[in-house]
Image (cartoon, rainbow, N blue to C red; front, side, top):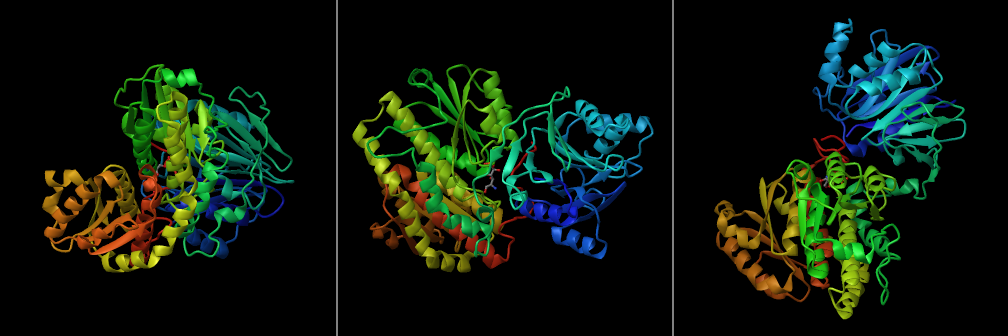
Length: 608
Ligand code: M6R
């Protein structure tokens, strides 16, 4: 989704804004722009396409000034074009605005402003904002932005500059991420931490409906009523390098390689042999756990797939019924929620609009909410009752990899925590699972050594138009994730099916040469899965089988086999997903796709 950067200081704003926007490229965008104040002159440069196009324009006609706002736009209202790009300005070019989110009542505001004589040039919802601020402007920018915000419905993070007050940037957030960076003699706003990490590690996390006035001298946080807010500084401990490629060709492959460490970090101080699961940010009591009669796991995309594994793990270990829901469906299907319901929301970014809305829906009906998220201070972490951070480190590639495996670890941690509190599994079994979990980083490292098989597989299959992923039980959950990876970065149509479901329709699509990736890790289901593989082989499919080391009998049925280290069956997804991530990565590279920034996708989907 869109990225925002704002800067006030002594140095030139242009390079700071461009550098910040480049760190937000991962969010997905199709145009970019900046507005910079040169004394009382406000200059805007913007264009369709990559940031490099904007840089080229700025090289030809540099913008001078040390106060400005910048934006990368992911089109929602109006096609990607120079005109629809942000910043948008009022008619006399004195006020400029960047915006992330959607102004839901923009048609109404637009008509109202037109009736007052305002003229519009773009198709965007955003353009109402500079005109609204203009309408209310009476010599006080913050007052005008507050009045404009009071009129707007929807979600927004907004940065505003005005040539009549050339020393400041004013900002506000509601349901859209925005942070404030505190420098020495310079200050920043940004959609995400990497955008400002080269300049400062001290930040303010903003809450909804909080306003910011940024000047060279300092930062003022205000409520919608104009009262000043005192906020603790959050000090970022991770390094800027964590958000760089570090010698890898793409962020995705770097992040795939970071998985062993991420898995370990997510377990550290939580999973210890012979000790109960320890969770610092979870305050739910034994009695409250005993009282839960239903769990909803709600999430989108990859996080939803982690939730599917979570259902298996929680039901198996804690014996509590779990439903997994796609967040965008959950909020509209009138689910049965009460005080005995627990919701677990899973979100890497912690800002996904649908997930956040589902969380609010559950809370409004009295449910307790646990947030599993990777981003400290994100919206879901602030609104949930309990938090379990997945310590994956910054994930920049749009295609989620290390966030997924850490979400799986979080699911196991929660399942074990509930099981211990409910005494639903004997302690030997719990210890067995914990011991197996602690071996996962090493085993993940081992799988990363089998790249050649996958490179070879990718070079033979990357031109295919369709692909199938098959699995049973937990392998099916992983198949769904593998299939999503292939779709999003390799642009190959792909379907994931539960092995037993094949005969009920999809087998009609299998013909000579159809590519199938079959997962056969689950011991109790191995023979059944082999039968399903035979069904597709008989019809001419070209099958890559994934099984535990030692299960060489699979070779009799498949065209190529890849073996992963043996682990406790319940934990297999953490290991078996890695070959699928690598296969989709190599297919995307072979096809020449933009691996880290796939077309039409955004890293963090902050609009509905
Ligand atoms: O930040 P979230 O985990 O809430 O994001 C959810 C999905 O948008 C995300 O997992 C998406 O499906 C990824 N592109 C998958 O690789």
